[in-house]
Length: 298
Image 1 (cartoon, rainbow, N blue to C red):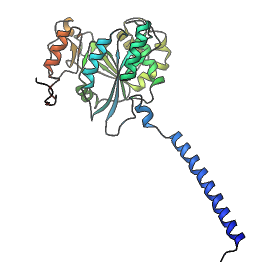
Image 2 (image 1 turned 60 degrees about the vertical axis):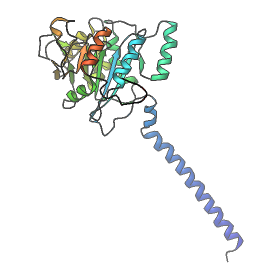
Image 3 (image 1 turned 90 degrees about the horizontal axis):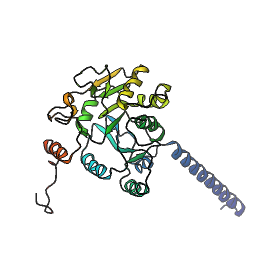
């Protein structure tokens, strides 16, 4: 039988060891959490780390104006019912400049609370006075993770996400410039520039735009043409791809940039009127996957 003093000493030793182990465990847990990516943090922003089941990631920024509430709600339906999985993890956001009206600050705040799909840049709303530069140059500073590709798109373009992903998945992830080359009859992506309807840059080019002196001093002018001039001046975008005829303007709206709707479409531009949208949505039968329900009679 152990003596009382010896028993007391053993219990004290065990208690001390337990406290030391507990402190070590807590310290290790804190350090581990600090150094590990926290997926739930990104999920709150609706931007997640690359999923290993996807081949690449794509960020689509739709440049629009704060007062276009109806257009944003409509486009949420258009893109919210599409999927590019399992090819790509695609995030679609609306890109605005600084809000200038009291009602914008209330109504857009509600949109952010409900949908969390708006980015407000430090710029003045414009078409050719720096918004596109601000968009590309800001993304590396504010996004919680990098993407393989970044797309700039207009709010009057219908993008089919899965065909877009299929067209990108075999292309380089570096030094890439992809879109619809201007002038309209051209098939040479190395001459002139990609139309502002919707063009894609690889992430390294987005970072270059953010850091380069070539771009920061040339932000005024036709935004799509400027991007082409930046890349040419910087000797960038060795990998260029023009996806014609899969990208085009709505029939009859823009001369030789327009043609009839075709099944292999990736993007249709200049879809401004409701009857044009209905024509496009009907042609591609976007509601074909609606689930049968007793709640409605179609």
